[in-house]
Length: 418
Image (cartoon, rainbow, N blue to C red; front, top):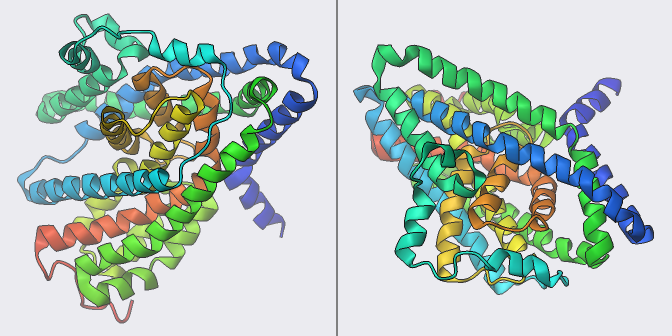
């Protein structure tokens, strides 16, 4: 019993502390609204630490992932098909979420008018060409280090990773540096998140004290929609993907061998912790080792259906809070692009999606009032998001086997005994 409690606290302790901070902050905001002005600086310190860390975190996460892809001809077809499968399933998950939010809109609480004007005041006279150039590039290197130019920085990081991958033996030391830097930055995020209960609690107290207790009802609907949609997507779409990959037997093999990976994903809230279980289940699903050993490890970092869906929900919630229309065509297209990036950037560690949330806030230039909202949504949907992220990797591997290796790409020998 003691061991079970210890494992539970180890896996969910961070989330429980965040929820405790949010609850205590809410209580302070409701019963002591005059004190929230004194607490807000604590939240600002936490957010500033995240913003200061987001640039190196993004650089090492993206460039190291790209640099360490095996570019050999042997893996070329598998990797190209894998990229198509990853992108397709991520976009499908995002589009499904957009459709649900269109049919079940959320009503916004009242937000101070200055928050909206802060968002809308810049760049109104720019042409589309000016906006596009500024969106994807900068004219000086130092400008890449500003979170105001985050998309340009992401593109630069990706190209750096490609260059490192193509540099051959001469780039070995640099690739090791990128991988080492990625690990260091992950631990930096973990350290920063140690104060998240205090920082988010302080900022949530400020939100409740200034916007009001109606926030609780506001969060309930998007969370309910996400959990219902996530369960539907998990059962229906994953079954559809398994059917495309291997017919009825593919569906049977997938669900028969997906119980332990699903339980691991929910209990650990970590795609990385689920990866070994996925690799063990892959042969019993009929996935060849040549596919599983490439797709599942890369999918742990690069393929996240749950993060795709939560990204759309968080962008939608942020736009509702500031009173802006989420369903404008340009906003939807940008949201899809951000979702793809978030699904790549949000590493396989618990609560790793905070970096994607900082990216989203930066690209849209949203006011600080929207930041705690998207972080709270991300925290509360983490268990089912991890379930979709982690178990989606074996589904992706089944699809890659089908399209890269042909109709008989899935192995059948020995499956009955597995």
